[in-house]
Image (tube, rainbow, N blue to C red):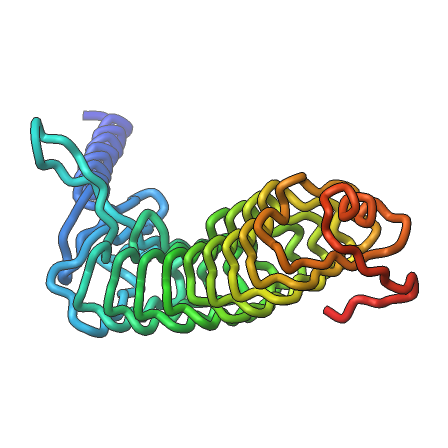
Length: 309
């Protein structure tokens, strides 16, 4: 056999073996697996894994940085088959867990979502990495404080009734709709680069007394602060341009709000149920016109008045 044919045969054999090895590796890593007490889905091409379940967690859970040589990138959940006619339901990794009290998430994890941490009735503490970009936590009644890393750009912490303190390590965080709905927050200093307060962001935060809104915010969307019944006084930044429908609806303790003359749109029902309210603004502005048209007392600010926040 000529030498060139031998070399070609060897190359073909090596390539064939490579294809076999690659195929075995691909199907052995991609898909759902169980290792080290965790259920995960592997992504062979990117070398990453999504944790979707855990067997018999202890009170303190340390999430691994790697599993089966894959970097853990996300905490999520999985579809489970059951019920009538094999219907599917989605269940987050720690959804409904009553054992876990502390979760430690290592560097490298970027996303906590898909109901991964939801309904953990005894969760008291969570440690987050500086690589995290998205965070969602829901219905965790004993969680009182969360430190948000500067890497987080999308945040939602809803119905955590005893969550009293949020610390933003940096200014890049964007809060989402429903972000703090039903939480136990008493006060908050919002990130300084925030551009708007989204719909229902602080709805039914009944213990909220103080909100520091940065000058970068230009709009407050619909129902953002509805039923914040402990809110007495609020100074909006002088860059506010619009206030959405029902934004402060049923804020029954609200006595004073300062709105500057850049604001040119306030929905008719923005302050429904705010029976103690006086609006303070610049004389001759749209804000004064709005107050008069809606039978809300108006207090004149000196035109040299500077915002304090």
